[in-house]
Image (cartoon, rainbow, N blue to C red; front, side, top):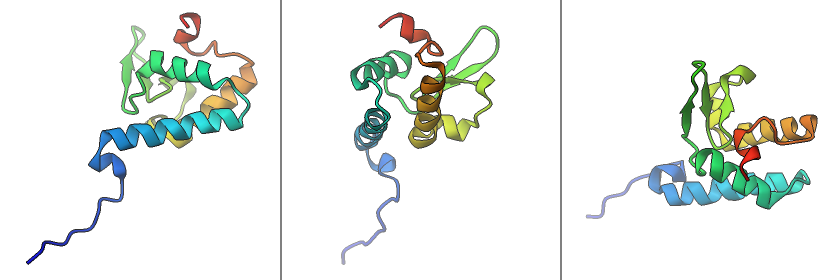
Length: 111
């Protein structure tokens, strides 16, 4: 007899490739809709986190940078938000528009 199982609700559980592509596509589409430079943001996130949604960076001052956008602890966002493509991207777009630049990201000086 055939085994029947429910598919996993999260495609990330099946394939990191699917997760990567879907999340990256989502982030860049939100950036485009916000009127920001998609190519620049693609390179910025590649530099910051290598497009790894679970990225963690540890700083000399004891703070951490989390997720695609490597958002620092000082911004008081939950870890869940920073690891979420949806929540972190909304925050990042708002920050970029408020600051009128990408200066909050160390990679902005490198690309």
